[in-house]
Length: 335
Image (cartoon, rainbow, N blue to C red; front, side, top):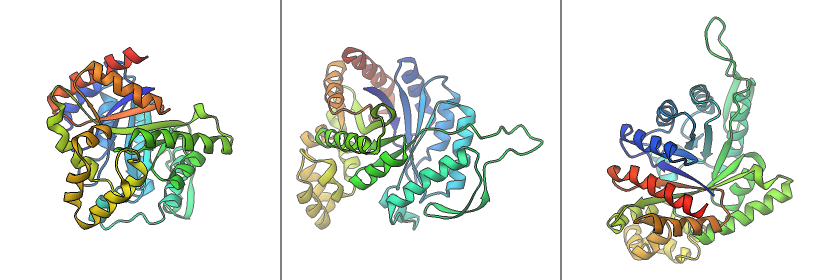
């Protein structure tokens, strides 16, 4: 199992550069930046990280066709590829419902729309011109073409891996059919991750695809520092941002998802306080005081069968460089 570290988009950007550089220095696999409406976008931070590193993979996470036209997204990804060829991975999804409502956007029929977005981005980034009305958007002879008389490079060979963020079976199936990998959302139990891996592997076999050609990433939130317990309220707040009805799937084996969804419909604040106890919060996130804790946690995630754990660091900014060093040391112990 490989390890990424990431950011949830609410932190000042410049201090994260040192963390990213430390991740590269320590030999971690990649860095991700998650886009959420109203906070930082994922494109500018990714460009910043590509410019300040040389080898580490940069995952552009949380991209949604509901928040920007695919033509613009293809342009942005093409620019990132120009900065860091071979190091960019796009991770797209339907978008967070709470954020979408704030800009009067929607993601009705998410599976066909995300499927269309994957296909559209592949076409545009491979240099094709497209026309027509698609679930992801409308185009009239649009393509990312070379501008004659300039230094803009041709885009014919600029395809990149595209992952789909997914939770439920329908989106997981679509990811197997169309994408290069899947990102399993944060706040998930180990039981859910193990189930998802088996489900995906069954679908891959049915589709005639090789398991080694498909990446399964598990996103999680992490506080890695002595006294991590004081940050449980922050982790709890993040867990509460997920739609309660999803807990039936994602938090199986840890809480009663049906009961939580019912309680949240009546009083979401009280439901969060009741269900997300310290013990539950620790089971649904990564909370470690040092290398020994971290090694134990990584072994448990590795046992689920995932390929990558992507730990979005939530602790104090001045602890994150050391957090990366702890993660790297723990990874070496279990290798």
